[in-house]
Amino acid sequence: MLVQQLYTSCLAQGAYYIQSGNEAAVIDPLREYKPYLDLAAANGATIKYIFETHFHADFVSGHLDLAAKTGADIIFGPNAQTGFKSLTAIDGQAFRLGNLTIKVLHTPGHTLESTTYLLLDENQKPHSIYTGDTLFIGDVGRPDLAIKSDLTQEDLAGMLYDSLRNKIMPLPDDVIVYPAHGAGSACGKNMSKETFDTLGNQKKSNYALGDISRDAFIKELTSGILPAPQYFAKNASLNKSGYGNYDDVTKQGSKALHVQELKDIIATNKALILDLRKPQEFAAGHIPGAVFIGIDGQFAPWVGALITDLKQAIVLVVPEGREAEAVMRLSRVGYDNCLGFLKNGMDAWKQAGEPADRILGIEAADFVAQYNTGTIRVLDVRKPGEYEASHLETAASYPLDFITDWQDNLDKTQTYYIHCAGGYRSMIAASLLKKQGYQSLIDVAGGYAAIQKTGVCTADKACSSSAKN
Image (cartoon, helix red, strand yellow):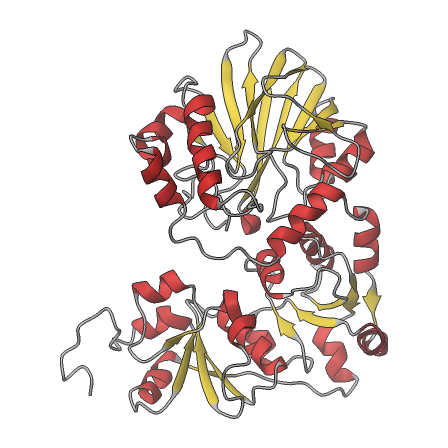
C-alpha cells in the first residue's frame, strides 16, 4: 500500500495518491495532471479512480483532464450532479483498489454532496479517512458556501454536526485524518498548520469533535465567518459543469510577447497587465496600469479574490523562467484567458523607450516620524482580525480582501500611506488604487512588523506621555 499526500502550500491544499498493486486512485487532484501521471508511471500503476470529496470552491480540480488522460472513473458522493460523465456514489458504497477498499461515507454539512472516503487495508481494517472540507486538523469546514433558498448556514452546520458524530467519530482512534486543506485556506477559520493527524488526537484537541452541544456547535461554526472570496462560487460552478482543456490553456498563456505585441493585445482585448515580480521591483518601475500580485506570495488566491472576471484577458510581467508556473497557478483558480507574457520583462519595456510608473516607499522609522505629526492618512489593509489584534491608533481599517467595496470611497487627490503586515498586500493595494486614479500613494516598507519595532504607540498598547513625544 502506498499513500502519498501532495500538499500545495500556496493554496493550502492536499491531494492524495493511493496505490495497491498496479492500481491507483487520486483524491481531490489539482488542475495540473502531470504529478499524478508521474507517480503512477514511477510505481508501475494505472490510475483507476478519481475521487472528489465535494465541488471545491477555492480551486478548479483536475478531474476532467486527469480522466481524459487515464480513462479513470470520476466519482462524487451522494447528491452530486455534474455536467460531464461521472459516477454519483451512494452512501456506504465500496470501491476495490488492488487489495484495498475505499468506502463512501456521506458527510453533508460543508456542502450537501460532501463525502469522506474511508480507506480499508487488505484486512478490511480502517486505515485513513480523506475528509475534504468536512474535517480539518483543528477545525471543520465553513457552512455558508452551499446555502440555497430552502437551507441556511445554520441548517448546514447542523448537518455537519450530525455527520461528524454519526460517520467519523465512531471510527477507531488510530485512523489517520487527511483533510483537503490546512492553515491559510479560506475554507475554515482556525485550521492547524499540520496537514494530517490521527482521529484520536483530533477527538482530544478539535472543538468540533469534543463535548459540545449541537446548538453550541452551530453558534461557533456560524460566528466570525468572513465573506467568501468572490471566485469561490465561480470555481464551484466550473468543478460541477466543466472547464477548458488544461493543455490548451497553458499553451496559450505561455506565449512570449514582444513589446508591440503586448501593447496590441492590451488594446485589442482590453487585457489586464499582471505583474508578478517582487514588490520592490514593481515599485521601482512598472507598466502604467499594471496590477501587482507577486508570484512568491499567495498568488492564486489573491488573483481570485481581486480580479472579478474569470474570463478577463491577462498578460504577464513575470520573473524569467517562471512563466509556465504562473499560467499553471492562474488556471488552478479558473483564470484560463492568459494570452502570454512580456519577453525579457521590464528590461525590454525600458529598452523600447516605453514609459514606466513607480510607487513611492518610505522606511518605517521615517513613516512613524510623519505619523506622529498627526497629519497623515494611513490605510491598514490587513485582515479585520489582524487589525483588531493590534493597530496604529489613528489608522483606519481598509482590508485588501474587500478593496472593491471601498476603493471609490476615498479622496483620490489626497496622499495615503499604506501598510499591511510585511509589504506584500500593501503593494497589491497600492497598484489597484493607482489603477483607479489615486494620485499619491506611499508604501510603508516592511509593513506593520517594521512599524512595531520602532516602539510607536498602538491602540492595544499603553504608552507613557514621553513615548508619545
